Length: 285
Image 1 (tube, one colour):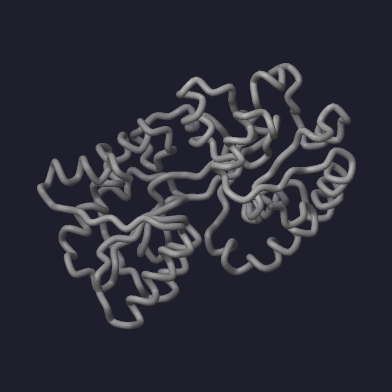
Image 2: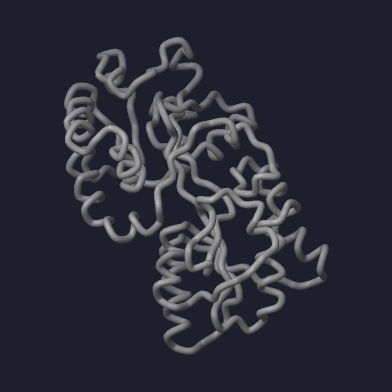
């Protein structure tokens, strides 16, 4: 966000105060302040499920923008109170010193091969990835398959996508199943021994931005909203290996088949998918 905010400030001369925290803490603060009528927030930018929660809590307001016409369909919400700005694309990442490209699995069933014993890892809370994946595999078939993979070859379950990506780079986890593609690209760009690929259709989830319903600086807030989803802001995101939602910005992932997980499903079926996720992979560390 730093580069985006800096470019906005330089272009419009508007000073931005940024409060950074986890998506959960951003959600908690925005809701708590709205309920207490402490209206200090103009813009919220975080993960899609948390943005959808803010909509349900009546924290956000509807925004109309000429840039909406340029966005991919999954970036738009029916209520128009937040919009997808960039995508978290779940991909598989591997250590290029520990795994040869020609040995990479082409199907999920390939992970049953004993050559992957002790080499697999996954993030601890990617239940939305599982929901998207099982939409194609089928819940019964998918559950059976991944339980077999874990029983046969094990699975290192770690909390945090940055940590998991770092473990791929170090070689501690030679092959990770749920890494954000932009994280892998960022490390790869610095010369780290990591690359990514996708087994079948990659699962994607939009992250987004919205304007607070009682924003103390509503005009500046809408200006930032427009700046982020317009070509200028989206190019800045793309230059930092994020996947933009504006169709005018070309990225390698524009040619990769994607399946989108709806934030509403993530919220409404969270307990079901998180329970199944832990049943298959365990709670990790």
